[in-house]
Length: 553
Image 1: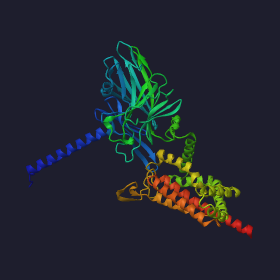
Image 2: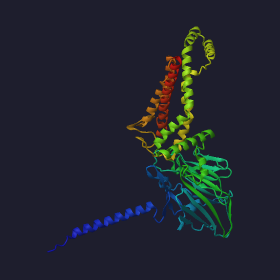
Image 3: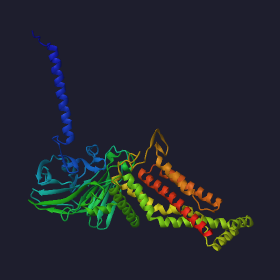
Image 4: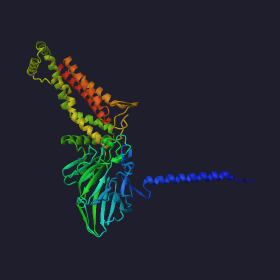
């Protein structure tokens, strides 16, 4: 005997399945929109690029990068749709005006027709605009080839009217925009985005204007590349050879997106004006460019080696070369060790070995100074007693005493000499770490990111100046600095040694406060340098003591 299911149960099953199907359709729709398969968007994944374009203007609204990292393939945000979908600025939008009539909004918001083709291993996206009132039609083409960060880009201006169209003559403007910012809108530590030009005159930074107004027009001779950059990424256009040659740049704020006064979060548009173009009826002008969209690393710049000029471009010439040398040495050590933490420790060892002769000379000079100070101490005491109330005579007598013994009155400060010698290297390493994409997000021991403070423990609350984390490396660095200052030559004047120790202790305390929130990579290097210095000083003191015992015996 069979039983018929209750009608109510059948209705419940039908409703449940209907709801499940509807939910699946909603998820599928959202997923397709996220991938750029919506009718207003299209996406492409090729090599390191994952890009979503909008058919409104034929420009990218999202650009993510697949970048090989020590722990695997990382995904980095170059262009965040949370910014570009705000209707306040998108990269590669056009500026087009004829007389007093601004056609930019029409050109950038028009619906473009899309054609996708494949040419061998190259994927091509071609966006064609509707015909404008004056007969001008715009065709934008993007070519993705191989595993390169460079993307081919061209803008074809086709004149389908009956009059010659002239652009870029001062009356009828044509320009390309880049902006408004690189990186994720939700970045924990956003990096300042600025404009940059690479020309025959070298690197020309286009800084955000401090007054919130647009910057002056930059017109360096022979612009080769123009783009926007932050600490780690670059989005730039390589200038065309003839038609569409980039002539000038203006950086302007986008007030709609300004969230606060922090320069790192401000939104800017870099407007790149092109050379004058005249297009006869039935003719076309093709503006050919090359887009670089990727990290600022030597490996990524391999095919566009001229972009390496951007490394440390704001520094003095000698400091720039010092940074490039440190960067090359650090990269070479990483290739050997395959670990950035060990590479930084090895960098401290290598630089210490290079500076050993200077270090030993400085240490022995300090030891001789301390011994001389001990010998002339009785004479200094007599001078202080004799000229107790006359500072000028006491100073003159002290100066003569030092000169008689072949010493400088600044000799007691030689204990700080070794620290001062290392300052340029420390500053150079600071810039290297600050601009090294390779160190970004790389951990070592308890440090989650060598480009950030080491953050051993969280306080659970904010401490003024120090922040919410206990950073261990600055503590160890300061302690090691005190350890180095505690070593002195045998026979040195205890009072003089204590004075030097006090000076070095104050210096260590100052460094602790100044460097507390500095990147862990920098603190790790400084700590290793201090420990190596302590070892060297102990060995030199031991050698000198043996030599003294041998000569006296």
